Structures are given as structure tokens and as C-alpha cells.
Image (cartoon, rainbow, N blue to C red; front, side, top):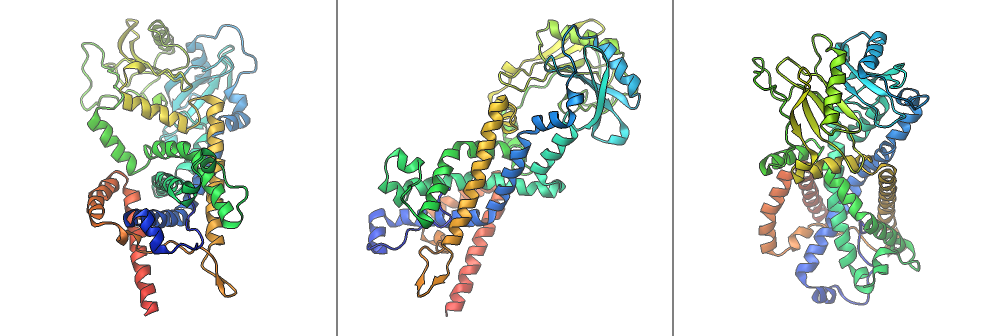
Length: 482
């Protein structure tokens, strides 16, 4: 956010005089922030650059899907009364008899196709999705999907999440998300509390770079002012991204459990029934309602019509996913799949034999933490507010790319080389800045850093790494000086 090397060229005022005006404690805290911002800017910025580039492309996955698979995702001519689900399922199974019927997703709009999801053993956790024209029951094609996502969206999602390197690759995105809020918060403090902030109290001086500045000062103004504009968006992406991460995400799940912030589970056990030995609650449905583990035989296609009719009577509108039960003791699950604001995520358990709802979970009854988590994820993916959401994400990603570029440009402009007999103004922030902090703050900082390391393990480990580098380099330099 602020310059990775945030020092002004020497002025007529001496260092002791400046320290006297601002106070030694404040100077120590600022020096530590500058050093931390410098380390994170130099070493973490490449990870941020990759996440910004991959996230920029992923934000427009829906449009790319339409370009790649539009003939399967959309109907040729919308209109008329949709055919019964049983007829659409029959057409899909006639064209693709392999595997077993896992779930069916009704169209989200009048131009969308119905998705008949098949569990095929050789695909593992992935599924085969057959796309059917709801008006003619004509099979439009099929794709190998992953929890409802097309192959292209799955590939782009894995690129953004782990660079197609599996669990090891997830560390890169967690490093970026963990350090992003540190860079943003630290940069804001340095920019608003630095000499620039004292000279320019107006909002214009904070939000816009000084057009009269030249060289490194101009680059710093562009870097910092752009960061201020992007701050809220970057903090939001950092927080929501960490909920998916490998280590911080696990801590977040623990906190949700402790605070009772989990979404309520739908009770699918039929009245008076007992689950088979070894069965677990919630095994009726796969991930997101698109990947059940498979059934010994296809359920009666007519049961899908009965389940849909019962769910509609219970008030579930829009696109819904219908998942048959894993055994005779369970009810069908019908879940709304409307991710665009205002969202709809109600679910019902349906006894198709009796045509009645046995359980109902409503989105309005979800705890606030569960709602914020769900909505945050959809906004992070660019889905919650449609095209406007995608445009905002694209602006933030492009802005972050520019901020990283200007940060490295400052590093180059203020590199510790010599031009004739004059050293370039502005050296790297002093090492060992943490030693300048007051003792009470250092003592209080130990449990704070420990708590931070528990909540964000990757941030804690890399922070210790930066401290170790700072100490080692300082000792080597002192040895060379002696």
C-alpha cells in the first residue's frame, strides 16, 4: 500500500529532532511497520500478482463457459411448457445408460437446460452431467463436471486455488490471503500517518497522487493512493479467501463450531424409520447436492416429479437440486440453488410416497456467521451480484496488479546503488526495527503474535521467517563492518 521503502530524502531537520517531534515510541512502531511492509512487499507480492491474474480470469468463468459450452448450457428456442422431469431423465438415461442417477438440477432461467447428474465409478469424485432441453426433452450433450462446475470452470478454479499443484499448491494462495490484510492495513497506517499525511490533511491529498511529484515520490503516490481506493475490496478478498484456505480455514471452522455459527442441517430421516447400521447423518447428498456417492439402481424417474411438485407447494421456487435418498429410511432432498442476490437457499426433505415435507430448513433461520460466510464466498467468486460483481472484482484485480508493479518500481528506484559520488535517496528500511519498540509493547506483543500465529498459521510461520532473516542479515552485516 505505502511504499515498500517509505522514507523521504534527508531534510534540514536532524533525525533526533524529528524523533523528538513524533516521539521515540511512535518512531519505533513506524520503523517496524516500514520494515514489515518492505519484506512482505518484496517476497509476498509475487504470490499476490499470481492470485490477481488467476482471479481476474476466474471472475469471468460464466461468460467463458457460455463461449465453450453454450450449445449444452442453453436451449435453441425457449418457450412453451417444460416437459416432466421424468421424461427429461428418461431421455438422458437413454443416451447415457452408464453409472447411476445421482441428482437433477432444474433450469435457473428460461433459456437454460436441465442437468441430469450421473455417478460414474471410473470418474471418481467427478460426475457426468447430461444437459437436456426442458421443452423438447432433447439431449444437448454431456460434460464431466466437478460438484456442478464445468471442466473449464474447474480448471480455472484449481489454477486460482493451487496452481494445479494439489495440497502443496494451496500454500501459495494462503500466503497471499494471509499477508494481504497485513500489507493493506500496514500500508494505510504508513500513508495516512507519514509525512505525506501530515502535509496533506485533505481527502484529496490521501486519495489522489501529487501530480507535481516526480521520480520515486510520484510512484509512491500512485502506489499508495490506488491502495487506499482498493483497501476495502482487498480486505474483503483476504478475509473470504482465508475461509477456504488449508490451515486458516480449519481454524475458521473451529471458531464457527465454538460460536454455533454452522448452517442448520436438514433432517432427512423419515418419521418412524431407522437408518441402516453404520449410516451417518447427512450422507444422503453429495457436495452441494451434485455428487452423491451413487445408488445401487436408479430411482423411479416419476419420483422426481413428485418431489418437485411437493417442494413447489412448500414454497421453493427457482432452480432447485433434487437428490434421491441413499436408502429407504431417508427422504428426498430438494434444495434451492439461487446464488444471485437476493439469494434463496431453503431446503426441504420430501417423502415422495406420501407427498409431504418431513423437514424444512430456511435461509432466514441460518445463524449470522453462516450467512456471512455463504454470501462472502459467492461475492468472492463474482456470483452474488451478477455482472456488477464481476466488474468490481476485475477492477480490484487490475488495481492490485498496478499496486504490485509500482511497489517493485519503487524498490528499483530506491535501490542502494550509487550515482557518481552520491548515494540514491532512500535506503532499505533499517534492520532490527523491532528492537526499538518499548518493552511493555514487546511483552504485550508476544501473546498477540502467538494468537495470530494460531489463527493464521502460514502468516505466523512466514513472519518468524522474516524475523530470522532480519536477525541473520543484521549479524552478517555487522560482522562485515567489523
